[in-house]
Image (cartoon, rainbow, N blue to C red; front, side, top):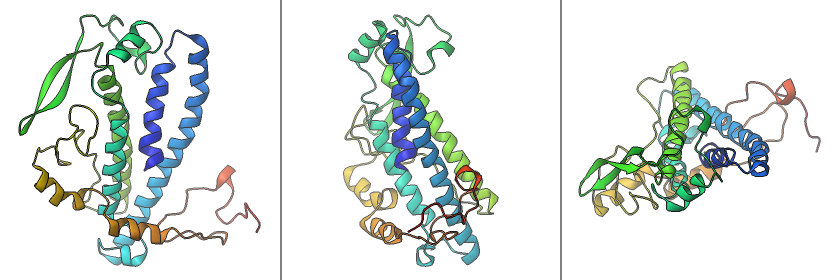
Length: 266
């Protein structure tokens, strides 16, 4: 989850610097983005294999309670998804930033895929729409696009994250796990930075009070018991061709080698 969500933040931050008019910085970011791509590949395929194994165990034992069968229950996967996604959103900072606006106007950084944007690229009069809390409800508001570049970048990141969730839900479908879905929580959930900082927002996007949020959080974020169970599964498997019980085997070995290839000799 960390390499899927948090390293993806790095992809988008580097993507803005790749648009820099300062050529050494721009060219350096090209290499760094290749490294981030590998991190995200590890995250995407890693979660693939966890979700697939969970689906296999649910089907095999006809139950959602697969912890006793050595797997990670789907609701626990969702909790870890909620956590890593929400803390990664905080890495983008507040929705507005005059510093980022100044960097953009000076040409030190751009927007994600700047060359695909169909506007004047100056943004002196452009506006963007964002969400913010207003009492017990969430409303939309217009912000100057130039100072809301963090929001713009975060929006592109969210769209990208949605593709992974779609991918994992297709894996569930392929194993006949009907009625179960993973989902991104609302962007205001569990936030410590930005417009929703300190606001008690449920994964479904409802503003609640502190007591109700505290009562619901064990269903939304990993509990101590969840962490103990996951840690208990983290045991090495050294025998070639064998895979830990909580993880599906990879589609193929490294460089096309068979699964039981002896990569390392002890």
